[in-house]
Image (cartoon, rainbow, N blue to C red; front, side, top):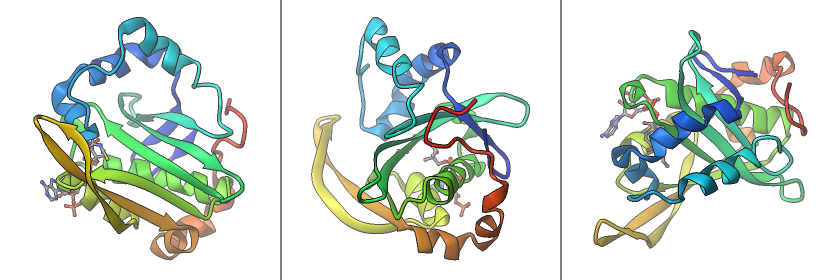
Length: 196
Ligand SMILES: CC(C)(COP(=O)(O)OP(=O)(O)OC[C@H]1O[C@@H](n2cnc3c(N)ncnc32)[C@H](O)[C@@H]1OP(=O)(O)O)[C@@H](O)C(=O)NCCC(=O)NCCS
């Protein structure tokens, strides 16, 4: 369990699959991920995700829970490299009624706290559609910087879309969130193996 201010992150589990599936089936949600149709069929969807839930060496998949236990989204890291001490992150709040309430910023900050303080990474990056202003605003609040533009990187809805690359370094995160640095020893987040 990784605690944010207003949310909790916990590893995804098999029982989350119906909710994950429902979010994937919502075109308004998935458009922000550049997906306008179902990316996988039912059986593959489950197989693809369940196999990943137990691994935390190079990738970790977390549910975003409110204090009352309601699951509103998912946040994850992938391609964690202990050589370059880097990883890529993604976030999806699938419950549209939970958008714009600060939960996404809190969840991403909690994940970065885990990646920088528990996994001792140097750099974390992400890509975001250039028109996704709510996401970009949220990432900037976390401390990410725009590093470049991937021009015409995706094609959907009959046109090409630019993506921005955003990144944050460990020392930038500590400068942005100094109190989290001093609280680092309090965290009970998962280590390099699956958390309990
Ligand atoms: C992107 C996402 C994770 C952000 O989480 P969130 O909880 O909605 O965002 P927050 O409330 O923490 O912050 C959003 C900020 O953007 C601002 N914002 C909202 N809509 C905006 C818009 N159209 N233009 C500019 N800023 C906007 C909000 O006012 C807020 O900033 P503020 O706190 O300074 O007022 C979430 O909305 C989400 O998952 N959306 C759908 C999927 C998605 O876009 N995923 C990211 C793909 S890269």
